[in-house]
Image 1 (cartoon, rainbow, N blue to C red):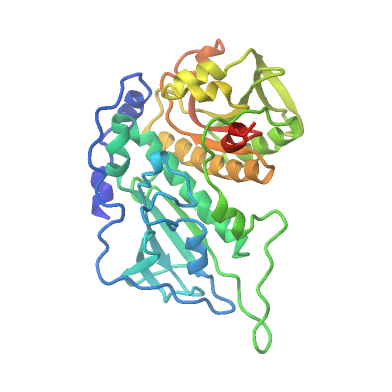
Image 2 (image 1 turned 45 degrees about the vertical axis):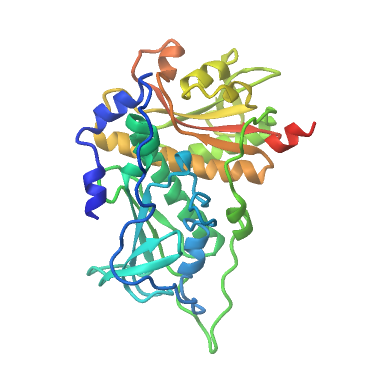
Length: 380
């Protein structure tokens, strides 16, 4: 996808350093088309056979737009600009014939791009790249961290859809080593059908989200008041830490009655205090001046990615942060919380604020949490 290659910055380290400053972005520019100009005619996705991976349902639950503007989709995106583009490498065992396809999330159609590469495994591999212009149109020089976070969210949405459909266990590539595609998610088919006349489809595990939950997930509008109970906050933190392990660390800034920073214990079974005092007003200033964050019940924080990180490290941490926050968002919703991802952070050197060496421990991504939704708050 040549358009995606041309969108990548020459120096991602410099792009991130500039995005972290207090320099305001310039005026908005045209976002361009919301979908790549895939060649050929659009094709509907056929119905799945008893043993097929149902690509129609998989993409509907993960990437497809649900409104005419294309802004409402199951995967979160900064400014609802949705810069992530998807190519599908389809092997055997799927509801589409094997081959390479470009996906149009606005029309929920595919465009055949060519044959599958040699060695394509059964199932589908969704290769995720970005058209940076869409996000740059509003966020300017702050766009690149957001583009990477959005890609991580899209990868997580594909994995959750696979689990909801009881497909094979998904595998993701979020190592940050490649510029194009930035990430990939491989979802194997269910396996062979046994017995005459076919066999019933496997049931999703009890921990898997339902299709209805995935279609209903949305970023809650602020305000998000109400501090989550400790057991719920622990569950959300555990989901994020489990999905975003490695270069990232996780904590949560909580509000009254005991404001401070809290994190998981070493064994992950309890919460422990990392710092006292209310960090939420500072976080509001760091998050592009979004004042409502100062009153959020809690703010889950992914932090790491030092100032001297190279491009693969930057890609890896941001992709994994987006992936983990997406899973944590669904966990929060399942526990009845209101939640909203927060991706734009300036001067957010958390380590330095806590007395450590500067430039080593920056906020990468966040999830604001509350026990009451804005519409509930407005009626009380």
